[in-house]
Image 1 (cartoon, rainbow, N blue to C red):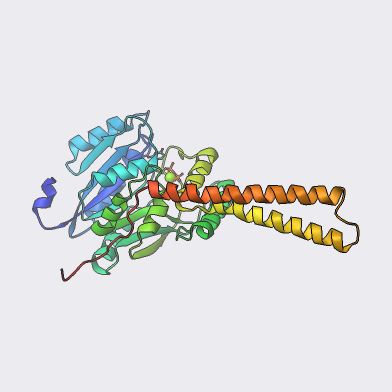
Image 2: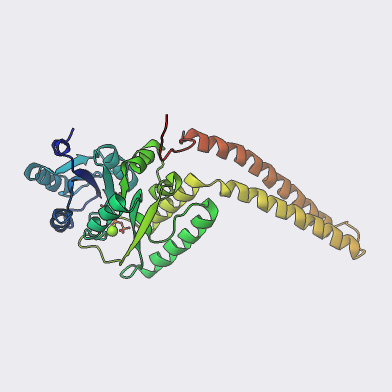
Length: 314
Ligand code: UDP
Ligand code: MG
């Protein structure tokens, strides 16, 4: 498939999702080419995925692919989102190792060499960048992001901490496992955590994007956060049940308290009790329905039931 495969050197596929990145791409291309030349023992291919850009991104990518035999690109028919672009890049990558990088140089290309050394020689399946700080970022966004990762960590019971992003180099086994999760609503950070494998985290400092603007508004970040929670957890359905149970308990306590104070259950206390009991029962049954629906929801993703890391002796 790839001319580079004729020799025995490893191939690293660098996957770059791009949405309206005409301002950032020239500097990114220069920096990555330089970093790639510095990696000994491996060849690299650059797979750019143009996610329906409306600026000159597609023209730039076409130019790179004509002048540089290591560059390939795909152009989407419209904006499908970064997750879709990452998946398309992976599907079209033939590397022994695959790495995701943003086009705005917020993922330092100098780390590629170290990442390759780690996955090649230290026995890890994946080497990922751990963003240590959020300096240069809008403080409101920082606060909201941190809170979100705190909640999602507890609710989904998967390792998706703040700073653990998409910048990572994976070996072929992990790459193929990620590709096996074919769900439409993709939440890559959850998928990386779901497939498991050994990951080494190497810290790096946040820098402002080299050029252009972030593609995320607060609204799109909120939708992304909800996607993350709903894709990996049925906790919101369980929440209805918990609230229902609490309402029933409150009804019981109101009843007992009113009776104990010798006022009888007539009038207002009875009304409150009835309201609490009816609402509680309603929410409990809604939650039971929700539990059935969420089981079906997870099933409909057709996720693999398990992922084998290694085989031997058969
Ligand atoms: N991106 C994309 N599709 C989108 C939004 C973003 O392919 O709909 C790409 C974007 O071009 C960049 C990467 O995803 O290469 C990260 O986006 P951005 O820098 O805007 O996100 P931030 O760093 O602000 O989280
Ligand atoms: Mg960025």
